[in-house]
Image 1: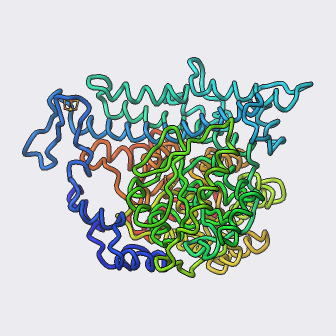
Image 2: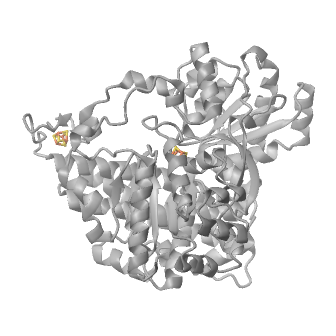
Image 3: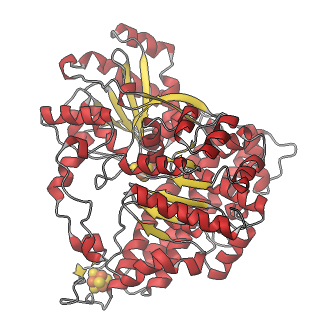
Length: 634
Ligand code: XCC
Ligand code: SF4
């Protein structure tokens, strides 16, 4: 099976082979005409990619190496220390999970630290926006609230949440939300998550030369670390951000490159942390800056998002989104972006050189993340709003530098409806999951598909996302989505109540009755925690485990290490998951067969790999039908 690796990974020289999206194709054309390089060009220059890397059999964990295993069985079969392909592949996989969990959880830590500073009056720009969520979370964490001010409760909650990261005893408290049977299974397997930081550190320790050298043992730690992300870091990030910025409610907006404005100052917020972008959204409404924009000849200030920062501001404010991961360069190439403001994660370093070809200011804000050719405007909570204003001012002052001959804004933009937090979904259902459960048990809704994750140049941009989701809804599977998949679905018009016309009859009727789209945008990637909470609520209501639900997951175009961590916790939670790109594990038969089969005997779910979205949908449908049958549904 290792020799089919390059299937689907051929050169993509024609523009319509790079993206299914018309707006993106137009800007790719512009890039070609202007001699501007994009990720697709750099991908071509990388081909053929290193086979040892693709198979996961290259180890650089000590300086006797690098060592690599010959997949043909002729050359070396062991590293210098004696590590086999199984050990090397498993260790590399574990390190990917650790990095992904670290990214999500470190984002969560910063959200909690901001929350704490807010509660102590040291982050004046932030407030408690969702009191009810604060109180319910406090009670969940056992914090008494009688006679205390909201700030005191928030301070106590922040302390307890911070302890989750460095916890030395016991298990993460969020796991109380896991169905009992699942938690029991984790306990039996010894993979109940402990402190979030501890799991990540332990991954690094175990993968050091000469520590953990059994593939199964290594992968179990991978599952535990993933769980500490999904039911720990990511869940804490979602909860705290909801308290600080509001729990999302359904709202309409627009997406795609056409949301860039011809006559307003375009400020793009890109990355992952709403802590910054919330302030930028506010600053863009500041009368002083609006006046300045007018003086500079602009008709206003247009804040738009990219990637998960975009998802956060879309979910809470209806701020438009210019695109997903592979559209970040394209947005700049329109020539219409005054400022590309970034924080952390999924930001291409290529933006440095690229923004230099246009008038765009590339502004980096996180103390953790810098890039070539940025204007650094470090963001700290104590003067958050002031910094946000300086950033927006920089953008506004840059407006007169826009070069009209270099500007092409494609007209394509698409309406969408987002904001489906678990709370909002329950609301739409009338307060309990029962109507959805009845729709599922009655057969109108065949099951639930969670489709998430990135773009990846190895797959035609948005092709995997859109075709998989369309096939699912056609077959009456209600889809919940986050991350770059959600943006792809929005661009394809799938996030509208009217999209139920594309759904099978059963799902269509349910959507029409509830006034909801057949594809529900639940937020950014940390908000996959919302999907877990929803799945848990449904499982608990039915008195079954998550693995018994007629539900399946997919990441059709995944690329990031975060996606590997997500895969680990979604499967650990009992959800069969189809990956659209091949993870670097095929160099080990043992690891591959464990991930794609053996895990079923461990956590009652496993992975499959299927680059063709229609075949991936079939796998999910097959799985959903099996689960329906087991529950006695037809
Ligand atoms: Fe990044 Fe979250 Fe992937 Fe998109 S989906 S490319 S991780 S922005 Ni999370
Ligand atoms: Fe080679 Fe072992 Fe060192 Fe890895 S840890 S580089 S396999 S000697």
